[in-house]
Amino acid sequence: MKIGNIDLGAYPVLLAPMEDVTDISFRLLCKQFGADLVYTEFVSSDALVRHISKTKEKLNVANEERPVAIQIYGKEVGPMVEAAKICEEAHPDLIDLNFGCPVKKIAGKGAGAGMLRNIPLMLEITREIVKAVNIPVTVKTRLGWDHENRIILTLAEQLQDCGIAALSIHGRTKSQMYTGEADWKPIGEVKNNPRMNIPVIGNGDITSAEHCKECFDRYGVDGVMIGRGSIGRPWIFREIKHFLQTGRQLPPEPFAWYLDILKKQVLQSIERLDERRGILHIRRHLAVTPVFKGIQNFKQTRVAMLRAETMQELFEIMDGITDTFFQGTCSETNP
Image (cartoon, rainbow, N blue to C red; front, top):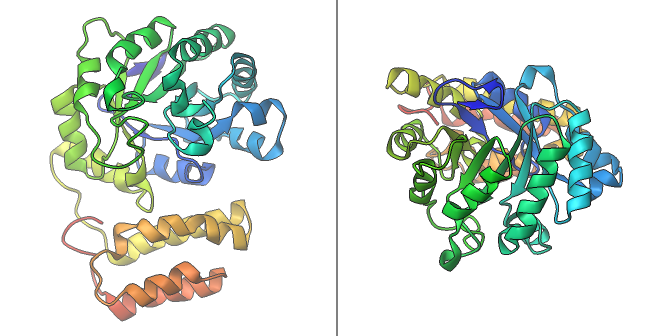
């Protein structure tokens, strides 16, 4: 798959943009495990043009994570175009337009998936940004606003006509948020539309190597994007790449290997922020990681781990898990 002049190879697997998740340290970790393209957290165009320092920090990218895309969102042409130009100065490989975020504070104000209720404005923003920058522009969106307005087949053609270099589609409507199952059938219909000639990337509910391969095979997508399935499990890219290349599951590592990766995330989070904020930031990874799934009588330890307020306290709890609950490998299948 090629996006502009960026060659991602066959069957590329991408790290989806996620607010409060895809900071630079997590992107680098996923890259090390095989992610072919990574995306920043959501960048507010309004905040960026007002030079809000916390927002500008999201533009920091490292050469080690390339290719990398900066994703922006907004609801007005002027600020979105200006923000795209500012992003281009940070030298990402791509600029991605967020027309898919369903959360109220974004979509409720007309940005993100809120744009699915104002298609003419969405298309105008897209056209103007494509004209304003000299790097590939891509779009991430959803099937439509709700079940009665699943407009993605027509919308995909319209966005392509605006000059975008690739389209990522989450297999839910805005109204669904993250409930129910992602529907990949419309994504496949977009990909198999003979009028579409840009890469089509599918997104939604990919949590295993087998399911990822199934989506490539069944729907013919050019790439697969992994979102929530990577939280607390950055090694999922390693598992998927191995399965795509060999048709076999990657043998599990010792339990301590997975624990060391999580501890590395804690250290990176603390280094990037500070001890208190770093631990708060990493809790969502510790809360959902499959590493501890199936361990009997683990509830109290999990609660203590998520309540820990210092690195020393947290690491003492984590170091005690292997001796208290587990020896050897984590399980017969990868976590």
